[in-house]
Length: 165
Image (tube, rainbow, N blue to C red; front, top):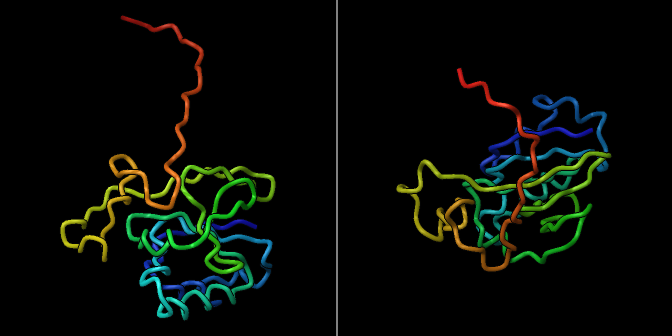
């Protein structure tokens, strides 16, 4: 099984059984994909451990794509590994950051990862503490230890005749 959610902002309590009862049937071969704003790798030190250990103890594997509320410096400290066809940072054995611009094969399906966003609250956040240049995928420079987003070529489409009436 593959489920998706978003915007944890460092709060893993939404995965308690009373909020997500479907997990009773899940195993570590099943996935919950957090589609941005994971926020559980925030301080880049031991203070992140309680949340990360709570996620590792879940019966399923937690995958996440970065959003506009992440500590990209802390994520960049993890070694890059290959996993299911793409590059990842393994935060814990079953808590995995799916890096930008990658394609992953999961349970017979292909997932493309494109993290980041324009941050609506960047003017109220502190540079390199709660705000990072890499957050905006369209204007940010290539990250220090993370590969830049893959360049995709547009697919050729059949030309349709135009009705000019």
